[in-house]
Image (cartoon, rainbow, N blue to C red):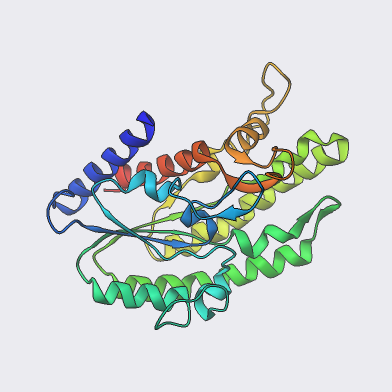
Length: 274
């Protein structure tokens, strides 16, 4: 709890430095959280049913800010533009709803975070390996769609601070499933890096800093611990539900500690960027 409080307080302080406006002033500056299930703190309950929660990274960051979540579980970059997954009154898609919100709250939005792309590729890894054709299709969708999303958001909120998030690798959990699982885990890391490179390129073209969730989860570090489990695998097991037994797991979503890691990665960009 102390770590979350420090994150939230530091976020408000970083935005004060960035905007010159006290985050506690009335009316409170607005923080808009956009994207997929990770943007709404999605977690499984004791029966394994997933729900948005108030334990996501955006809640960890939102003290002193008025948080609005428009994220949609199972959203892809394609559906974020075209709709069809979640319903938004008066808008066909999350992107349309976000533009409407930004237009209605012009000059009051201090921070916008975007975490999207995981759902485009998450079904490409299975117990039997990685479907490269599926991965290529997902990467192509991200390359085509994310610039469109960013163009519209930046036009609607020219003065807001943006942070995009890259992705951790939940498939590292396969390392614990014998030789074949270890091979899959090792194969998944460069593919995660490939996807994160595509995200970085799109965000970079729009001058949006990228919160390095990949590094926060030690994604590339296979250094074994005292128990022989690599650091990246141990982190996925500790900070997501991937290594939990049924019915809760395996589930790709972070637990509260994992969302706190994501919040720290965002805060790092707020502090170092401005």
